[in-house]
Length: 231
Length: 248
Image: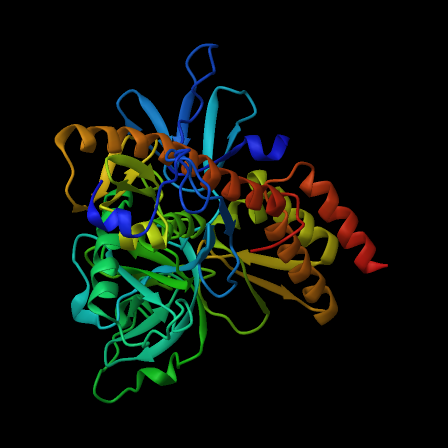
């Protein structure tokens, strides 16, 4: 089976038999002696030029990293901060100082008036070093409370496929269905459109991308799928 | 030959064992991956009459909070034998034996996992023995390691295990319940097959130094076979997922 060939299990040596020149290996690998071994259950694929072998994990939890845009849900309102579920083993913190630039008088203002439990936010990770919980900000443009739209949850490891090469997959969905797609690195995807039906089609298409990630010719199949649904 | 082994004849004149196997022959092994939908990773293992299911959750938040480790993930294993797994009902309360096996399974798996990649989290491994016939700890390790890989946890290698037994002066591989009860020795061995490192070595009974050497050689041969079954199970499951037939 050709598909089975490219799947790697933890500990498997990556790209050993390639004799032609030096092949760079990147992704979920570790070095043992002079060999690269896969860290997780993953697929190996060459980039377009064929000199970089990427090892892409198939499964796993979202581990935050600084600069990621994520979609979070407020789970707790504190005195000076909010706790945010970001679909990760780590709960994120959103301090008041990262919400508004105007000073907030703590004793008199109730933070739940700004953001309440269950509210959804689009935020950016500004610090995370594994000894401290990730800190979020919503001070930049486009970030902030999500007012409407449809939320789709996918595996965080499938996010790059939903985005597509240089955002091609998103652009395809956006242009075909006239919706806006916001992808959080934590595996939460928000679809905002004027028409409920089109939002739903986009959500189904995203679920299809997740199910068929790492198969060839996915973009054209998604195109056909959306065309079929629109008819 | 010892007195015990004579009481129950474990080896016949042709050198066959009670279930007809040769000394260097394993019981049939079957592994299925991803049988549980709620778990992050799961595996079901049949080793002869043993039936074991392992579920992995995590990395996830540690409850209770104070148990979290600042520099690495907390690996928790629970091995339990279900009340109907043996002929006589087994009380569901964890026995000393189950607590011990939970510990040795955890210690057999820990060296293979990049625990330092997930500080302040917990990785929970639940192992349930549905049917037991000797060698459940090795079957549990096989199932747990496969389930961990299925969960997408970062690992150095898979872990596979096999028990080497002793009947009289003969070393036998993968002992069953009868051989465990009436044999002269039991030595479960777990290894990281591709790195060739031993992560578990227990023994009861008396082994001579050269017997231990031979047991390790026999074990590593069979562990390579077990590993190939683990790899095949994982790859076949994910090849199907890739083609879009099954999700999860």
